[in-house]
Structure formats: structure tokens, C-alpha cells
Length: 129
Image 1 (cartoon, rainbow, N blue to C red):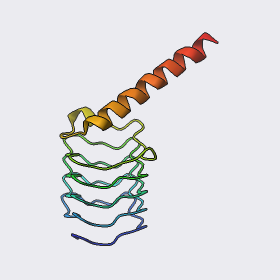
Image 2 (cartoon, one colour):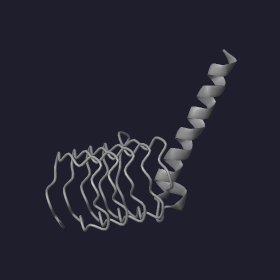
Image 3 (tube, helix red, strand yellow):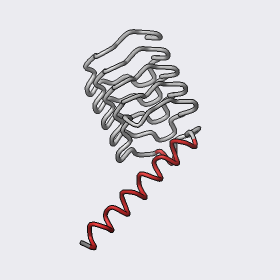
Image 4 (cartoon, rainbow, N blue to C red):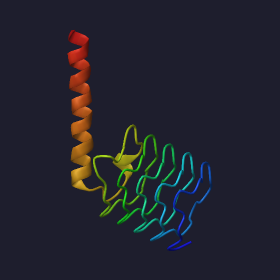
């Protein structure tokens, strides 16, 4: 499926383990609860893709474009994130296994750390009221 165009595809719960989807266009695809363990997504286009609860353990996401994608509660244990691109609209809420992922960009680590600190200080402020 290298270079395949799967834009807007509904692949909820799909099993695409160890598939080769490098350079595939998955813009706007719904991959909720999909199993993508070990999948090659090198250079894939995932603009606005919904990867909520997706299992991406050991996946190759190198150079993937994740602008506006939702990775809430996705699992990234052992995934390679070298040279990924994302923006402020990319959602990483409760993502799992990021500490086990490899080649995580420093800017992403810092962004998520700042978000956790802000969330923590917001809670402290609310509790004092």
C-alpha cells in the first residue's frame, strides 16, 4: 500500500499491522482503535487524521506529517518519530508510550512537558478558589 491514497477512509478498528504505508495519503482518515503495530508510515500524510486509541507500537512514523491529527490515548511504545511534523492543532492528550518511543523530537517533548505543567498549575489555581 506504499503511496496509496486513503484520504478520508473509515478504518476504525482495522488491523493494518506490519503494513507498508510509507508515503501513503491518510489525510482525514478515521483510524480510531486501529491496530498499526509495526506499520511503516514513513513519510505518510496524516493531516487531520483521527488516531484516537490507535495502537502504533513499533511503528515507523519517520517524516510523517501529523498536522491537525488527533493521537489522543494512542499507544506509541517503541515507535520511531524522527523528523515528524505537527502543529498546535495536533492533539497528544493522554498519549501512551511516548517515553518508550524513539527519536522523539526535542521540541515535541518540550511542548508536552509545558502542557503538563500548565495543566498542573491550572488545577492548583482552581483548587485554591
